[in-house]
Length: 295
Image (cartoon, rainbow, N blue to C red; front, side, top):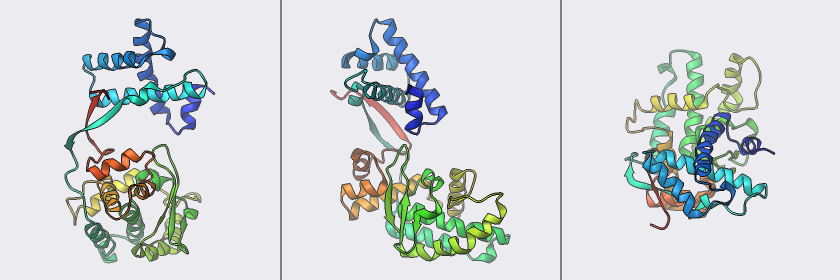
């Protein structure tokens, strides 16, 4: 298995692979110029490469991406038996302390957002199809607010992943998150049932073919952005779905332990969950600062 196939198997898209290849060409070229064997590079030499990138004026966020590409490469070499350890794992990224997201919401506020959206009367919608789409969107908003879904989770959600008898939803794994099974809230169950039995079949009449997906749309991210814009009419302080997810995770941390929250959020690393407990909001848009772990 070559490196491209390895990354494709890990879920990386062709565009991500091209970006990684660009980073690695820069890295291996730097090593070649200095007579350094890539597979036998020392930790200090790896830090030397990163220092050289800083001297070139490369932004901290871009350096973080380069380090991640290098990390993936050494993981591959280890799997092939061509390297013994991944020195790039010792390189860390930390938050600068300047949060772009200035507000998260309490559980009561999240529920109010959901109720205000779901209670919009049918007569306010311009057409019968718009009524159906609003009911679908209410289900989507429920998954954002009660289960902390990301757009990618919605894109992989299938009909069989929802179990109304057990009041649970299965969230499939992806490159960034682990699989998990979460409970549905009482406020969601009837809405989801109506969607499955009535709304979705009627919306599917507009589709050319059947699909196992719960939400059959071309771009799930765009669907979420439209829902957020609608929510902002009543709650302008809502900035996006990641703000909602951060609020959900912080609320989970207040009522459960760290490992429980890690599972529910689907975080692959406990450090990601810990960052929400500290209030760092790592994973959201923010300034990045590169640092050496020995500083």
